[in-house]
Length: 369
Image (tube, rainbow, N blue to C red; front, side, top):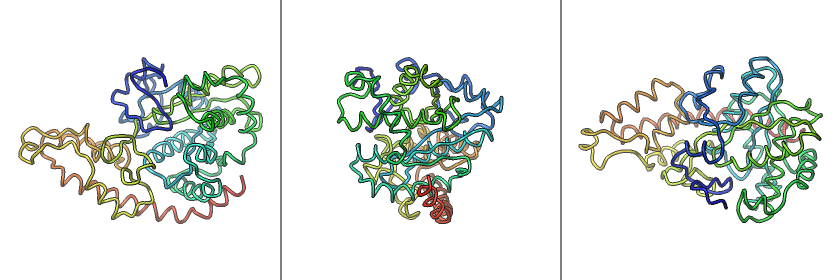
């Protein structure tokens, strides 16, 4: 692994305390420079949750010029949709909504699920149906989307094999550290996922944006390098990316991960269980109610505030009111937890009701790719 102060590990549980350091360390560009050019910005953009980008100007130009572009994302089908997956899904849907010329590509990364988590392809195929139903319930437009499993998309496999001639083990070790070779291969396959929308079968070179969490930047850097190396052969444009902050575990210690089920919320959680999880989540409260009333809380440290701000409250004024009441001492953690638990419970009930109506469509889309 490199010796930078911040380690970006796409397969780990990295915690990033200062996202602005990524601008200097890895060349990520601040999103605030271009955010005023993005029409109808998503709440992640408005609230600084999506904080950085690479070459998003290419996509903004395509939107304003009504020319084709693609947005690409995916999921490792290893379990139920958690809030980190929800973030990238919402961002994919947002970019898809910006133009009738926007095509979405969504990958069920079953090969990576096997390489990283040991999930058999038969099991990941079952999980993928549930994951896709979540995505459809969140608002994906299936008529403008190509959904596929990595293991069944030969175009991705062919690209990854071609890319393998351009890399060495030392190069991959420098990016990712010492890994089993399956993860190195899955990184090349993921580059195939990202660049496939620019192949002739999908209309040729075009801007492609990949919304990711900040810890996924090693994949983006590798893919952009491979696109550059194969520009003469394929005419690839370097893929764009947007970066959002990581959703912390409910304990506040690490990013939310499927590896620790009690640390996360999933879209399939029983609403009553979700309420209990929130009641035990980390807050930014003081040691006593009296002290909280006197000097106020610290919402920046509070996972409960983060849940609403990142995921479940669309109204900016409501989020600001929660923040102001917290720092002024007017808002007490117990009441705030109960308020957020009710919001999350209602959201999960509505989402799960919608998801049931999309199961058959999800199965059909994955069976007829």
